Image: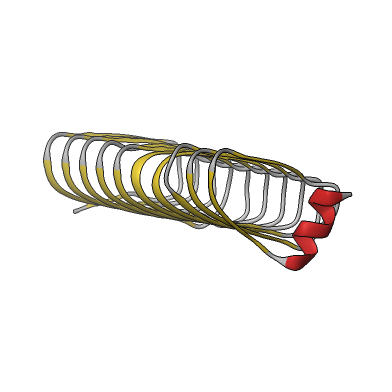
Length: 192
């Protein structure tokens, strides 16, 4: 286990099972493939991980996270975060802020708080809950369950079974051929 205090830390570890607890500050963490558990405090952090099972927790700040294929569980609090994960099972819980999330093929479960978020997923099964704000969401072919809050959202979907629930107005929705499940309120908006 690696434990650091509040400061600007640079941590590099190889493949294997790694547990890192970095305090507040600007932290740069690089870990290889394997089982990585990383906790970081407030600050502007940059974390790069290989394939495997990755658990990442942030207390806040403007963070950049990149991880490979596998099981990725990522929790961030308020801040403008950039998150990129590979193929596999990805569960991402991002707080308020202007977040960007890119996820590979597999099963993606993504929740973002209020803010202008950009979410890009490749498929196969995607559950996305974007908060209030001007959100941009796109996905590849697959089954998509998408909910957004108030704001002017743009949603672009591939082929598959798509369910869209939206609380705002002025949405632009471009579903591809497939089975669409749209709430009655959304049907009125699309027909307008």
